[in-house]
Length: 100
View 1 (tube, rainbow, N blue to C red):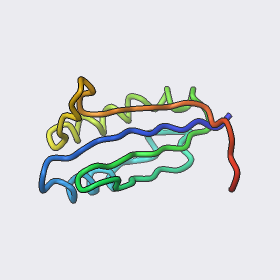
View 2: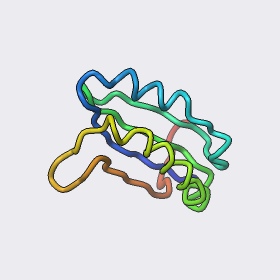
View 3: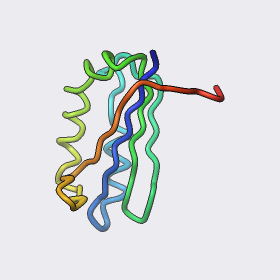
View 4: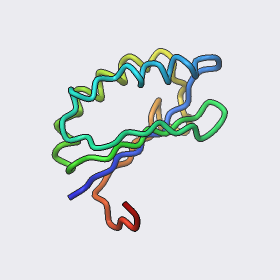
């Protein structure tokens, strides 16, 4: 069953290009089961990472690679406030797909 994850992050001022570069350099071979990956600019310094996966198990297996990438991002991320920390992650199985 297809799974998706969405992670909201905000970068420090002036770090937007570095944030995008780090994601461009990410090696998808370390994440078997990933189908698609999007980096969405959702505000001035806010981004959402959206991943489409073969399953929740595939996404769970890729966590070490995702954490490794996050470790590269931590120095340029800004706390989201409200006790959320540097990232606000969500994930789950797709309940409905209207278009392919």
